[in-house]
Image 1 (cartoon, rainbow, N blue to C red):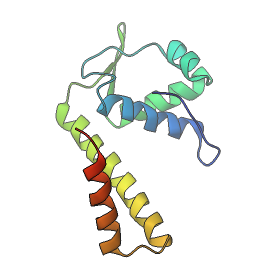
Image 2: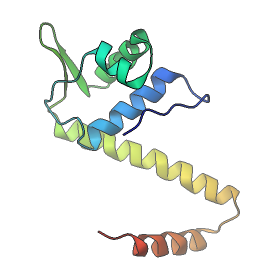
Image 3: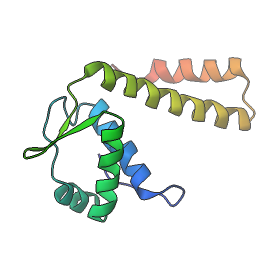
Length: 123
């Protein structure tokens, strides 16, 4: 997963979203030790202070835990991870539906388009 940022929102907020996605997708597994702030900020191409702020926000959301001498770890609370996945999905769905409404699609046409696309996706 690449680190891509836009100018619409603060970088730390985008980092939080990217890291959440890495957690809910399983790239960072429950209980796994995360790379150091210095390493991950270097990988993302951002200031370590900005990454530290993002990590602090993830701690506030109980997705990341700090163990004083061992570093930061992804929570082992699978329910919390699943709840975060649902929150992310809901946000993306709301944005998508709003955009489609702005484009003039009716609900029935939107459902038909989605059904057609889902039918094209190979499992």
